[in-house]
Length: 123
Image 1 (cartoon, rainbow, N blue to C red):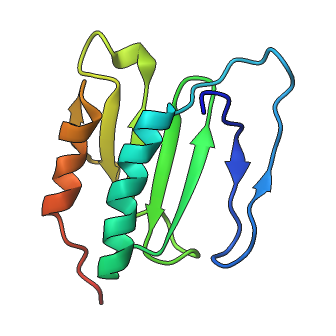
Image 2: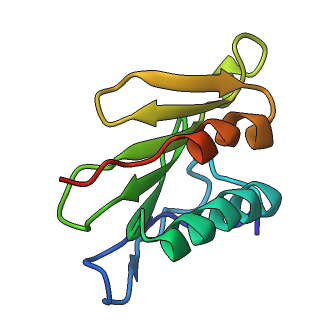
């Protein structure tokens, strides 16, 4: 699944449309193993009723998995992969809605543990 194309998700319940990049245009994406790890956590949180929607963006310099409580809001959390930071703080990070980096590291599984401990407070 290293050949993932960028996609734009619509409101919950609608089919997502796929935007194709021109051949040869570089972009960063999640591998099959990384997506499996992220979607496993996402599925557990959906089952608990905390999360309801997500989107995936593949940009030139990073890949972003955004998590929403409702599809019309800003993302509650963003899971980012930035290969340029791999030799420094680590390629993976979890970012809160406010832009605060909650956890950064080299191992995606360890970085995602911060989301297991956090609970979204609904108003």
